[in-house]
Length: 247
Ligand code: FPP
Image (cartoon, rainbow, N blue to C red; front, side, top):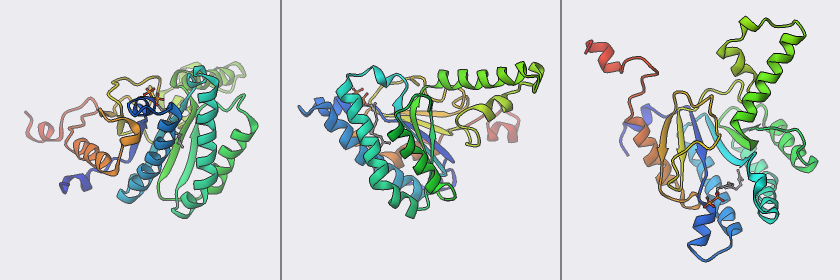
């Protein structure tokens, strides 16, 4: 690993964990086995992120569109998330990890909602890695909820329409207070955002990996970070070199 990695560790990495089903299918296993293996990859990824000093790690655990999957698979995914929080919460807390959950909480089953709230409350004051779990999350839905909350304030006379700014919209998103992702990784060879962090991804770097999520390892994570470190991020301006040399 080159030294450059360690001077450009991204503050926020977001991951679309894709390919659990195909990983299982390729081994003649049921899809649920892919999700189970996927949870192990989640554990290793959280550990690695903490080790190397990433401050925010967002994982797309369950999208607002995932409810369309067969009932048995939805039940399995919800069960895995619940088991992960029940079993790993104490260890994550010990590691000083703070948990934040983004996504629509309206209409969630109370057992899931209570667990998510417990995870956030227990770890609220932790200061190492913030693990952001995107659950029942869809970016367009998030933006629509933020727009509705602003519209309500305008309707009530608390806000003038002309005062709506990108910063104000930011403050009404589920991700309020979380910096935009520097890097978004998607596994499984698919190259799209699938309604994930559309607003927040304005200047993110993207890395698409061919490996399926259950095969995502510390080494793959580190090599993605090394690739990120070599990118020239300009945020609409000039590269540091061009700005310095004027060419
Ligand atoms: C995509 O694979 C993955 C998901 C829909 C869910 C990801 C969930 C986990 C890894 C487990 C629970 C999460 C946490 C944070 C404990 P896919 O089923 O779409 O795979 P395919 O595209 O190959 O069918």
